[in-house]
View 1: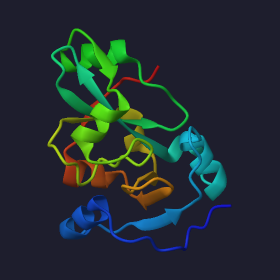
View 2 (view 1 turned 90 degrees about the horizontal axis):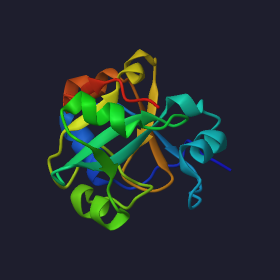
View 3 (view 1 turned 135 degrees about the vertical axis):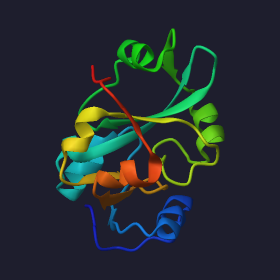
View 4 (view 1 turned 120 degrees about the vertical axis):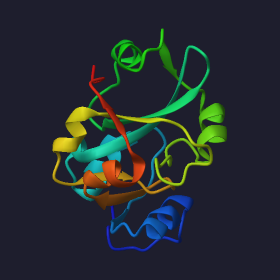
Length: 162
């Protein structure tokens, strides 16, 4: 079962957030392969809509980008491509995503990325009071205000929900 009070050692994401002076809460749970955001939300008793997935994708020129999406929704790659002016967008293979982000798939955070990449977010995420987003390790979510995404990441907001 989930334990939201357990502290986990620093990750590149939490080091980066601390350097930016961002306050967050830690939420640790037992990671399950292919459990996704739904498993984390269920284990921690959080609304899955407020658990935000961090997805590494690439455009038609193989340029990587990050997409932030509600845990209970999917990205419309057609809508995303149209919104960013690309012919197409597709998910990166896990090993490519790891090389770009520096994180294992299932533990990818938009904070402290290895490589600077544009970050796009589903615009409805901004309306949430609090979000829970990966902290840079599998089974580790950070709770914070969605305002942080604007303040420290300069997320480009798009309508890309399927």
